[in-house]
Length: 311
Image (cartoon, rainbow, N blue to C red):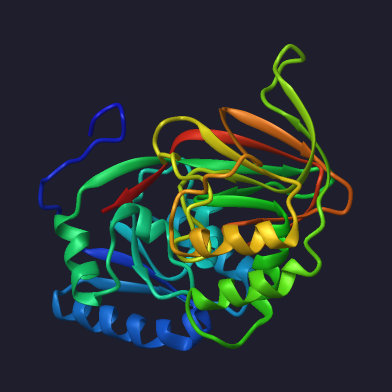
């Protein structure tokens, strides 16, 4: 493995795998995916430790206990970015590799790593995949428990879109985010942000009216929308995208490009690269990896090479 999070091509001996499942992910698609990969692993003679709990907290504790009892050769996450987020705390800063079988709504971490949703390919990944270390983000709300994130943390308008999309049953897949985004335009007012770009008092501070501020370890959220187009998940930096005050009409022009996975080119959009950033704004919600993360103010930091993955 290289210092920059490089690759190893050796075929590994895999005897025991922990499989983390979430039957509700992807409108239940993960149920079939989990069944398929566990059948394949069983045929390959691999012992399966299934982690399946009714809550995120119990899922984390089950995985933590599994790792403490004698770590498996890998952890397979069958679900979306939300399930990945759930298990980051016990996995971060360990050498146990994470393999993904994307079966959620957005699947943006799998997209970043070039991982398909084929259970056979996911099973093959355990023995033949390249080992890579990537960065994680750390979101620290004031007065609340900190949380890891692997993809993008959102505040303001896009956090409200994510929260609305999470409540919707239809449509399936990434279209849900588009529908939620259009629905939230009516409420999409900008608020005054204070953006502290760094840890020291001498670092730049941006005070501006903004519709949203997104902080990315990876480039996409919401199923491929490129909110932080230049983000790289192993460069030791977070990418910050600020969308300033724009009209409803301008939002309707920006959204199709964003939904199509295109780079946003607009005078109201600013981008920064930082090791840490503190965001303050009145009544602005936050999400991370598509999961609720309280309200601002929050501090976000990069944790270099914090997660081992197979890709």
